[in-house]
Image 1: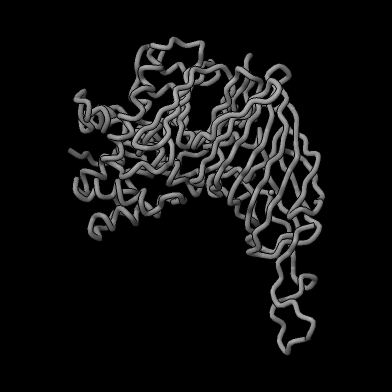
Image 2: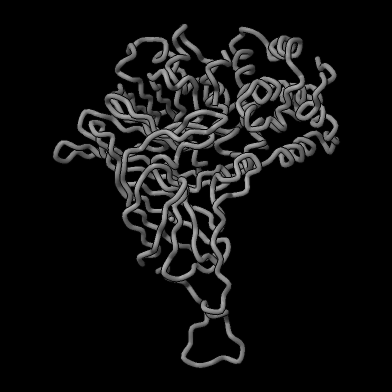
Length: 471
């Protein structure tokens, strides 16, 4: 993300069923197993109620219909997952929408909703390591979800549609989800809206079909994504669909903005900027490219929604702005393909995306990364730490600016050959997965030929005094 202020009765599979009685049972009968409820939080120290435990989602498949005139959303979410314990019940995050029916492996399941939590109790317990499918029918009028520290995210209605967007949570406002980045999953969406209105989302476009005044738009993201990186934008857009290096490129500009204005001109550079970043970070990690601009004063930020970043139009009020594009596209490697295991480590996302802006500016001949570092180093408030930002500082200057300075200081400490090797080996090693700061430190030490970097990272990520300068 870049803020504007910065420039789902289970059919249980049981082995050993037989009409004879073997001397040693092949497996414990299900009635003898200890089934327990999955946790109603995934265990993140910053957001204990986010996500859920006891299972791992493989994929979300949403078939939805939205009526802009009434603001009503409804449909079905099919969730494939694998139990990570013997489950008697499990939770999904769902805010402000009403569930009418649930099945687990085609058997009717009981359910209850309270405080943005949907608790599902299958007809039979789900055995650890068993894959299962939950189908949830739901409907309602979606809206935003508030975070007492970070403000609103989620579904926002507009005159001609609506959009779902936000960090650190937003997905639970429009579909049942394990809403934490540590549980990444594939994502499919078929969104039906009135004719004349587009519905744009992540991944590869599957085209549209029209029936009786309604059009269904389909999108598929086959690389697992963190839930907050899913999005939908519904409204009247000028949509340009092309290809770039053999992959679909979809760029959507609201009809409310000029076709040749600064937003459109900036978005047209998406392929160029992505190609430069690929020279720094390795091959682009996804099957589609693109961008969406939201013309709404409530969106004063840009977000690295997977394969297709979303930009608030405020970024282009002063003219073209390729820096924000470099930032959000860098996230496709740092934050999307390699996602957070816990929110405390968000500097791994934002520090590298900030540094990508510096590299892009240097590439364009406007300045150098060293010059940008020097300016920031001279004026920064070092009491703010990126390694432990706290929830209030999750999107603060320390995470972005000091995070970027940490990346540059690492470059100067280990040298360019090791550093630029790390910029490619790190996203390759953890592609489509999750990682922590400790993982990154280990990777940096390996790239540096075994050099111990603990004191360096202690100073730059956690220290509250000015670190020694680099040049």
